[in-house]
Image (cartoon, rainbow, N blue to C red):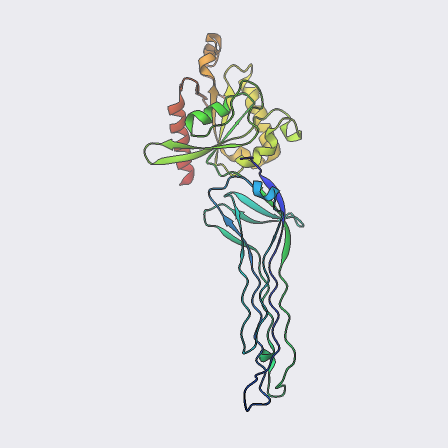
Length: 330
C-alpha cells in the first residue's frame, strides 16, 4: 500500500431540518391549534481513530465529506428524523489542522479517539412552538440551522517509542528488519528507504516497543537536500532517538554533529530527547578501525557496537532500548 502522510479535505456537517407549519384537523374542531413539528438535527462530521490504518491514501481519492441534512418536521408535532453522523476513519497519529488559520485543532493518538470536527445544525422549530395566548394560530416556522464547514489538512505522524536517525546506507533498514517484523526495502545504495518504516520489537514473552526508521539524512537536509527532512515529523513524537553511525566513517564525531544540527534546525526540541548511539556494520570493520574506536565517546556517550548481519550486539541493543523506553513511560 502506498504511504501517504498528508492530505487536504473539505468537511461539512448537515443542516437542520425545517420546522413544519400545520394545524390540527379533527372532526367537530373546525379551528384546531397549530401542530407543526420541529425539524431533525443535521449529521455531525466525526473523525475516529482506526488502529489498522497506516496511511492517508484514501484521501487522495475522496476530498469532500458532507453529512446529510435533518428531515423536515411533520404534522401532529412529529419531529423530523435526525441525520446520521458521517464517520471519517483516520490512522493513529493523525493531526487535524484548520487550513485557514493553520491551527492544530485535534490530535488523534489513541485507539477509539473521536473528534467532532463539524457539528450538525439544530432543526428549526415548528409552528406549534410559537403558539401563545395572544398568538394562537402562528403560520410560520423556523428554518433549520446551517451546518459547519471547514477545509482541513490531515498530517500523519507515526507513533513510535524509538526513532532511528542516520545517514543513507548507515544500516537503519537492515537493523529494523533484524529486530522487528518490518520488511523495508534494503539495497547497497543511498536512499533505498523512501518512506518511513514502523516495527514492533518484542522483548521477553509479553513486552514490546515500537521503532521507526525514516529515510537517511544528509547535511543540508533542512534546506531540501536528500529525502529525510520531509519525514522527520514521524520521529517528533518519539521519546528516544537512536543515532546509527557507520563504523567505517572517517569522522564519527562529525557525522553525529551533522545529524544533530539537522534535527535542531527542524525542531530544537528534538535535541531534548534521550540519545543512544550505535556504530553499525561491525562485521566489516577493519582491524585498524576496531583499534581506533576503543574507548571512543561521542557527545559524552560510549557508543554500542553492533552488526545486524551477524546479530552482534543486537540483544544488548534491544535490552538498552527497552530499558530506556520503560524508564520514559514512568
